[in-house]
Image (cartoon, rainbow, N blue to C red):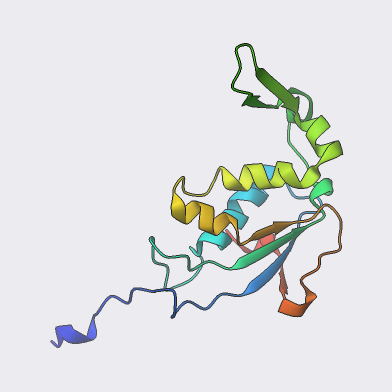
Length: 151
């Protein structure tokens, strides 16, 4: 048997085929939306997935203000941050953040599902989140996808 025909193909920056995708967050649950978008950003849905290369797509998320959360998370879930000063722990509820900056809720949940290294920071730059149905990326000719078709 010819073993030379069974080479593992490893993608690199020049061989990766990146696309622009539009995801509508209207009526989607936050965590399920975030995990599927993180998978698209990482490129795990492609056959030439390589763990150390940015082989994912550019993803545009629209209608971020129309996401849903299950249970009592809308009232109970809080985001914590620290100012750096003693007694400087601040908290913001999801309801407040969703009313002021709905795109940050989606960004924060997706960022938490990406790798915590330089590659994760690079992948996060491929994400664009908008509160309403309008986005300024028509020139890239993005393809609209239905997240319910993905696992």
